[in-house]
Length: 592
Image (cartoon, rainbow, N blue to C red; front, side, top):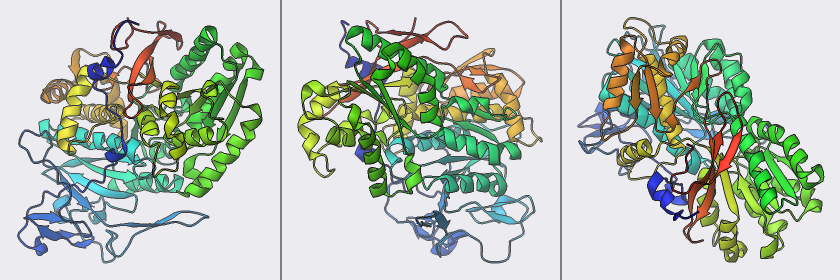
């Protein structure tokens, strides 16, 4: 390879999370005021700070929404409440505190949303309905509250997922604001957005989705994040209710097998492509230097088990069954945030494979919890000899976190003993992820994102959240004025976004692509979308997209590593799901 691989980073404009990217946003409320009495919410009286209303329990002086006239942020109102979460060892429960938005009085009659408080809407029964709960803590309104279509999101954005998923949720908000700033749905309708956090686990996911469907009345949900949650919520909540759902990240192939009435979609390719790429990667490694002893550690959920099932028999056939050890580790959501129990469980998993160590290669199939497993492996199964350091490979759920895995080694994290080995770990870590990035479009998106979110950098996976949102809103544009925007209507509009007559690229210095797409769709036309994450070509039978796979490495110095794609798995012609690895002679890594 004759090019400077570090230049890939500049070419692609990639950004990765660091500890400082954990966003604790206090977005300003755009309701003007002169006194506190002007700031009435369902949760009680807010405060008037610098002629801007703040909801009950919100702190003044926090980070404000950018108000630069050049920003693409629309006139969106943020309403939030102070909520508490109580948990027990048996079953986590979420409750509202005394300043919550839960109504305690007689329901208020209404005809339009503006006759209710800012954290309420006018429900179908002609009464004001609460929009906020423990899980669903913020609502974002356009300027006109009375002619809106609601969408929601369900994502675990609290620790330990904040670094990985807050940027993805922010991308959903940016998509809504970009759309409202540029255009409207047919019938002069704008979009309101309620976002929910399901970090607390399956019960929180179910509560959030049920609230969005039954109380908020959303037409669509962006999310959930994890495949297992998508399956559970789709089958129990959204499909029975006829609500559209599009996940940016749920890649398990079982999602494609849902009997979903065409209501469940995703912007990330299914795991079949990554699974084949992983098998072929280890075949290539075996041919070049030998894979003497491979350990596969997979998360015990739909994603981890699905990939493990897809790759295990092929790996055993290619490498020899005696050279492959596999184990599943518990899903971190099973522990309700109890880190001591999580560490103990992961220690038990590693102890169970210790008799087969040392391993020449270790494959982690999971997400950000891989950080805990990586440190634990190095502290227990590695003897400190550079010659026995395995090559670590992480699946796509952890690729955005590779830099953080290195940067957080050192004082204050209990990993001080690993600090001398940081350079060695950098040299022995790689990852695989679907090709979900259009470099030019991501750069344009990144500029808007940084303006909107206080100069924070988006993760590359944020592109999937933005595209999921924009595709949903574009499909809504097919619904005529006077007709209700329903999940079924959105699903019916999705075919108009695939391989259509008008090419739409989410690029450029302005948002004119939104208006162009809306106008084409509103008159019955079709569009061909080139999103921030790349070409959006869905299989209309399964709601899946097809894409190759990138191979990632950590480049640069150990005190400031940079992740970059240095290989690409190019798929054979459709309908093939396999391909071959290629190393490009010049960036970026691309096929053809």
